[in-house]
Amino acid sequence: MTSGIHHVTLITRKVQANVDFYVGFLGLRLVKRTGGYEDAEQLHLFYGDKTGSPGSLVTFLVWEDGSPGRVGHGQVGELALAIDPASIGFWLERALRFHVAAEGPMREFGETVLRLRDRDGVIVKLVGTDRPTGDWTSGDIPLAHAIRGIRGATVHTETPEQTARFIQRYFGFTHNAREGAIERLVSQAGDIIDVRDGTGFWPGIPGTGTADHVAFRSADTQQLQAVNASLRKLNSSPTNVHDRKYFTSLYVREPGGTLFELATDGPGFTVDEPEETLGTQLFIPPSEMGRASDITAVLPQFAMPGMERPIYRDLPFVHRFLTPDEPDGSTIVLLHGTGGNEADLMPFARRVAPHARLLGVRGRSTEEGVARWFRRISQTSFDQKDIRAEAEAFAAFTEGARAAYGLEDKRTVFLGYSNGANLLAATMLLHPGLIARAVLLRAAAVLDQPPAADLSGCVVLVLQGRSDPYGALAPALETALRAGGANLDVRTLDAGHELVAADRDAVAEWMASR
Image (cartoon, rainbow, N blue to C red; front, side, top):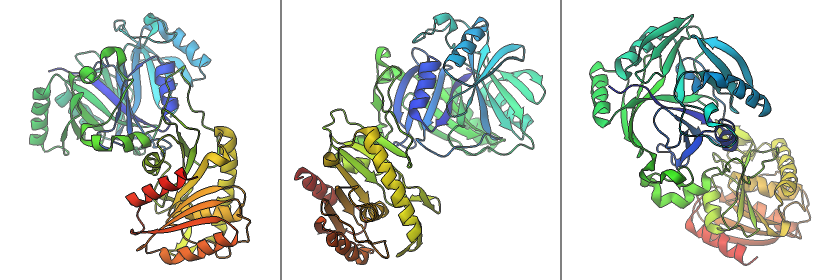
């Protein structure tokens, strides 16, 4: 039976910082970038050696600007990477130079260990071992000091004996040693799993800065199916088998709750990309190819170390900037509806204006866990103080974005949908002169007493749905905008509150005429 670690998968909230750490600082190779197989709108990055061989892979699910998790029992708590024992000094000096948090050196199970934290706070241990020199290095890291693959991972569990037996029975590890609350298990390949007794510790919470799972090696699908049959016979937690294109995967939770995967060694990452260019192309899962353009629009962009990249500014709202391959200098600022996020309207906007830069913004208010732009008291009654406060914050964001991202008033359109359109219209009335061109999709009047505002320089497209249940609130908004002197183009479409193809066509035609 093949045994060993295939890969470890974690979660990051900042893709650019993640690439800079694992490629720029650690010197791993980005060997594959894909839309997720569980969620194609989630970017998945794979780092490893020259070919992304099993045992070298560290992968990340990108939850851009997502909520942090909490490390606890029922999770992988630490990742360990192998280096030459003589390289500890090199990495300590490098960590200081790159401003990477480091502890040590220290000794664990007779090995010298340097503990680092990546930009999400994940503990990454560099462990001096006698593993042979690898086949990949990059940047200014000599091959002798390069990462030599995964040394191991630490699993936190409230049921340490059951967890250890589970790993030994189904994944081919054996008992090696014990130090304090940690039992060390070793594979045929020599990599290790440290099972840490987490009794009395709090449970882990999924989120950024935590691990999703650890994957063990399977020689082929025949071995994987044999393990699956054995788990089903045991009546373990539910198992799932999936074809991930680059390997076949079996998922199961061990008795302590940590998610484990068994992954086949093949077919590998060169099935759709030559070794020379691994990691340079974005791949969309085959089942989602019909939505490839929309998926590409919502995935966060990043640049490899040393390449030009977007510099995000610290502004009042979480936001994402998308630059097309051939930008024409125009920009669309996007304000999502209730329950959306900064990427929701990007597919819509890309279809409207393929060469425009897109600046998606996330509302700061929440209602039952979903994002909004301001609080509401009922379906048709809204918190007036909150509207004014968030409009003021958005005005500050707009001024900051103009300076940070070079927005030109005459070439910038603000586009809001539903709750986002309501905040956008309120901002125009409360801060006249700030926004000159706007598209309001399914907007409603939310200010109880709209101020008199000079909107004589504004051009606005308003698109309403004929059967929109909130349509009764629209005329009051149109009256307020017209009273301020805005140049209004109001159209009613054969739709409800949802967006339809006619919205996209109308916005594209309106923008082309401006």
